[in-house]
Length: 436
Image (tube, rainbow, N blue to C red; front, side, top):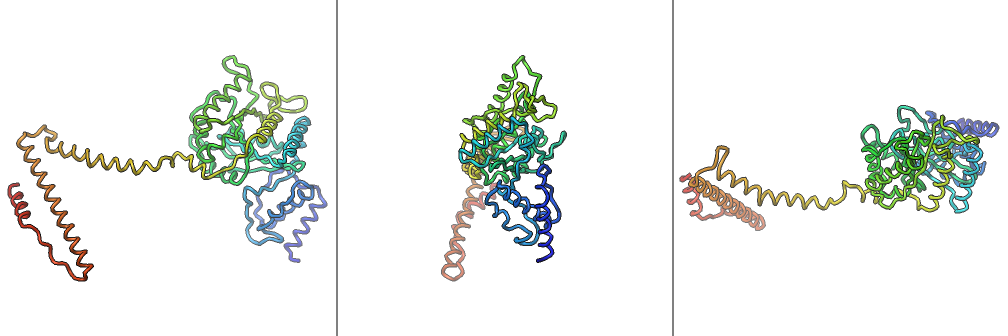
């Protein structure tokens, strides 16, 4: 047994003697390849022994460490996320835990063992905070004044044989421009997955849909396709809003705000028939809570159980969203009606030759910047231009005849004789030059 294998066995024995790894601490990248590989394999073994994951042996294929090739560790593809035990579920209030377990049981009864939720939107709308709230773990970094989500990440948790996956994403809009790198990362993360629900997040305390919201909607549609909206909820964060405009009730204001976003998505996202139900979210630690500890919205209702109920119900009604590159290309406005480009070019060329050139020529004959020419001079100019055109056509005919003779001579294998032309044409041209 090599030294590397001995170290791995010692680490494995240590994990068996101690309690399971602390899943509340976010996984950090390690520069030591051997230690990182051993840690990943230990996590898989713990989960398999606990009965939460089955058939994950293919994840070990192609990795470094014992039984795998040596060299630099390779990051697993997005579709091969290592799910952990959902220890954060025990941190939720008792009523919320009960609701979650009932919903997971309902999904299992329908032969559904995985639920994947994608969070998407501009920066600062609460995507990472919502991820942490749903999982009841601090898996995504949250900063008050800037986005800490550098790339799309999928966090998977397993409870009672069911896997819940949340895909947290960076802001689609940075400043006043679309973040193309962020959209590319989102495409990479969802490619090959079945996404059951999409939460398009925006703030409840914003009072209108502006140009930046439209940019976000159009960017998402271009990158993920119009069909992304068929699985989308309008998620409104900062749901404990207490200051309401125009003497509206809380529910009336929510419906008006959600309706404005629905109209924008249907108009600028091509989602003419999308349902777009609304869900409310409140992540603030200062939010009021129920006696059981559940965070309450402005209407005094707990938001997390309601969100999961709606997502669970629609995941059973909707077909999952799958990224389709062909659909995205077909809906790309830059690639629509490209067959018109040659026709437009031909029309421009025809207009120049048949109309514009003739107009410019006639304008040069009849006058200049100082006024029109007299009729006699105009007639002389017309005749001169006609002679020049005839001379140019004759020259082209001579060149064409010469080219034909050379081609025929080359086929017969000898040099061609000099072409013979009508002397009368040359005399006419000389006379014209003398007159000029």
